[in-house]
Image 1: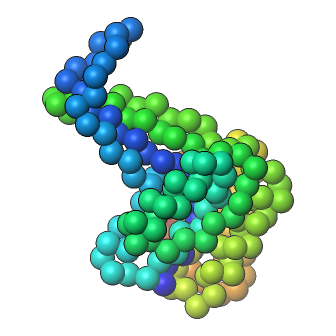
Image 2 (image 1 turned 135 degrees about the horizontal axis):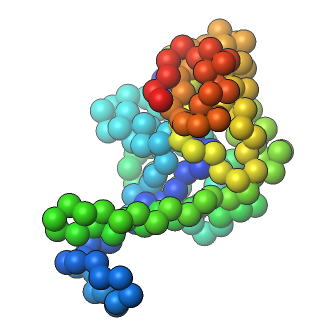
Length: 183
């Protein structure tokens, strides 16, 4: 079992167009919705290969319910923590030549109690797990040391932990000595 923590999940909407012209109205040739966020993507890949995984993530607003539905459809087990804010929507505009333009929302502003609930849910789900993986950017309101706290708590219980992040959250996590990093 691999448990992933994604503090800033998303719904990823890909919109396909012929060519992007600044300031003009475009008619999409197609679109696609997928559950997103680095940890969610790890769990999606694991589930697609038949591996046991649980994605721990904050869920809020109508987008949160849609994200849960998308995870269910993809066969990804998840443990949702209800938050006041709304799950972010990331939009990718894709052109036939491979050009991609991305618009990423910031995510919900997490309260201290919501961050603690994410950590506790991750620890509860990680009992007997092979790995705990903390991935991605942090949403507004999340402390910079969120991944460092995760590393300390998982290691304190004898578990193995991997971190995939960047910037100050990554540096803080590295100082806590995870078993594996992906900078």
